[in-house]
Image 1 (tube, helix red, strand yellow):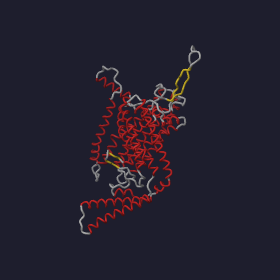
Image 2 (cartoon, one colour):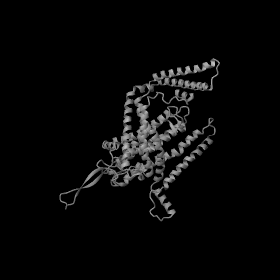
Image 3 (tube, helix red, strand yellow):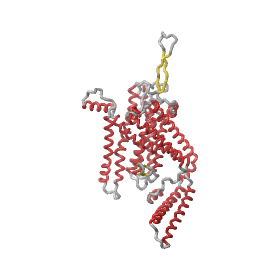
Length: 541
């Protein structure tokens, strides 16, 4: 039996790291939301909701390294279990702790996606200018939210009653079959229902990853490398444009001075030119503010650091591209096929990232630091993609994400998208390093017979240390709890597999587009034709 002190010390080590990360995540979410929220339209409820939703997304992503850490830390590098983990019941206790963590976080995600975020969004949409009838506002918000609750209930029911295994007795009555399903539900603690619901949301997250994360992985490093245009040059160019537009306006107005009426076409041109001139005036005003901004001056001084960081990010992106391509190719060549979700145990082709994680394993805790960096890299590139593209519904742009001017609805959409992206990120990381995500750095002892000169004598055996894979005995390697959620339904894994190919294609397209685009303006996205003067006022003050 494992001593309680040893068990406690090993568990506390993993969860203490998670607690520190949790505090950092909460601080980051508060700063991030406060940076982008609109000063004029901000609301306490939407701000708190956005901060909590973003925190839940990041906390869920941070649980994967803890999951891998705990299963890996049960064994020594030579493949034997540590004293506190020698008992199977002790290992089961540790696994259940992580499992309940996933239960809690995934349940909160379902609550946020299907109830709380839609309610807050529609509550704000139903807000009147006089803000007098709160009860009607809540009633209308609940009315629209009910549709999301119905969808969530349907997903949970489908996941509950999808039979992964048929009843043992084929001649069972309908009631016995239903009773069997309920028994299966109770024995799995609702794992199937929750897994099906989360996997369904992950499909939407896959589309967001293909759209935003793939583009963010290319635009983020290239923007750091290319930098921004010179403020002085932009102001000079803006002044020349203003003079040109003013000249065209004066030319059209001179026709009125001569007593000639303007044609319909000239009146439209005059209106367009006046709107353009107003936009240029606002642009010049923003450029003056940017020139006095201390952050821009500090950014110019840190230009070499940004270039190095951009080069590092593009190398990481290319590493991910190569690794994901090899992993998908490995599945295409060596998996059991589409009917099994292209699931592959271990690696048959050399996977750079998987090999790197296993190589770092002897130097604690470099492999866990790397898997944490990979997880957060996906999250930050997703944020960069959403920030650069905005929030779109097919060809219609719904919201823009801009510092100090992002509307509450846009922040809620942003956090909703990030929640869905994080759900798919776990599968993306599994695709990058399948063996490591499934077993961590665990090893086991394989007994192999040794030949002897005298065949009449019994052969001796020797123990060889091997990395855990699908061929290992069941009691020698512990599978991460994340893997159970990812591959419970094969048809989801099949869709994810083809989604990875789409991700690779979109990344290449985004890389080409980012390379062809010139340097962005120092006030990129701050001044648009559809902005109002009020939005400028809140930015200035």
